[in-house]
Image (cartoon, rainbow over all chains, first blue to last red):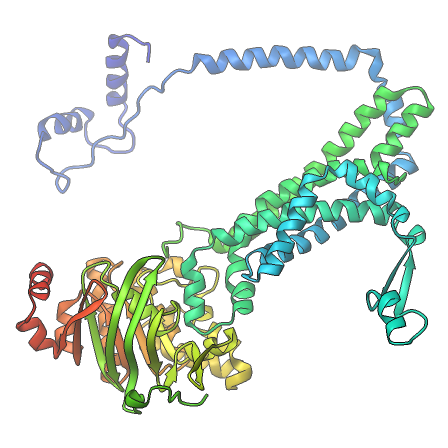
Length: 341
Length: 269
């Protein structure tokens, strides 16, 4: 770029003096280029030599790399010399049994909450697009409420759900009103569960996270379904497929291409949000455990670093999984873009 | 399904495959069809032409109830499309019943609309496999039939390919095979060659010509004048939501009576 015209000329000549694989004298082909002018003479004579220009220089990149390297060196130096890190202490405590149980709980919560969330999301998205006004409104209300309330608040709320319901019973609704009218006594209830026994700790936390996730997934799935060309639905209708079949066989499979990447994002976000269930409370969760060790030993900072490293490690694991998932999914899509629409 | 005998003076006779009576359709406040009266006999090939926005595609989509008409009546194979008429009242048909009616009608789209996530064979067997409970036939019988259809359109060797690996003309021929898989009594073609490179048009028209010679009832919206003149039994020219002129293709194409038809054909021919 910045080299003088003499340099440029030199470059061209140098390239001309070392013809690549094409034999035939360099002078000959160079002459061909200038002489050919407007005529197209590809049939006779060898093709012109390949272009070997000197690349544009990027001094800015070198400068940026230098600055980054200095900053990185400073950071590593700080990691090694700052006594607050106490690496030995951190590594000694990072893999103790309570922490590993915490890792297990966190992983379990993430996977289960995402699975339930995805199912809820598909359900809500289909309801939203169903054309049934009652179901569509219901789905909209669900999305509205659960996207509005922070996960932290949901976690605390579900931890205290026993205040609202001592037991949750299943049966025919409003039995206290209609049974006396019919002259009957007792209750029309089939079975009940003790909220205090079952809907607490892990289950309550899982429910809070899954319901919240379902609301986000509903929007992702809806966007995916709407991204599928309308012609696909019409072609399927014209073939005499029923609406439910069209969704299952035609629209949803094509929507997955759009749904999968943001779902990976959601999974990573969920992994981090599992820390919130400490407020349910769920004491076996990863961050709670690490924080606990820090508080007990009055040595908090190394445990916070340990938390960062654990989350980083698990997220990396998820990213590898997502990479393979997307790759296997795109196997059917590889090649040029689909020319159908 | 019982034959709808709603209209005493215009009972759809068995010789007619399609009967349209004063069909009106509007999108919002925009009128698109303003009283279409058409009859297509069994085994007839009807070509429909007209400027864009004349309502010809919309009419085709009304025939298989992809669009609901606002007024008038439309029968296909003796059945009122999309409704059941009982005691002077119209009852909307359930999704399941409309689907059953559509299985009797094949449709081919301008943009092919093949399912990109299924192989060519998968595209063709999808509808028969889903309808298996009602029509019978084992999976292998259905596959065999699908392969025969693909052979008929000259693409038996592409059964395992995916739509994106095919040229436009090949995709459209697969779409025709897919539409034939349910053994429909009527085929609708919505500008089947308009999205194709000129040199690929011929193969698709050849397949349609074969189909016509085998006695298939067809309504073809097209700008291929040569095809219309050679293959069609009747020709319809539409403009602004009405049938301007109709008759034998040679007469209408050779000696158009209306000014509108004349000016349009002078640009197409």
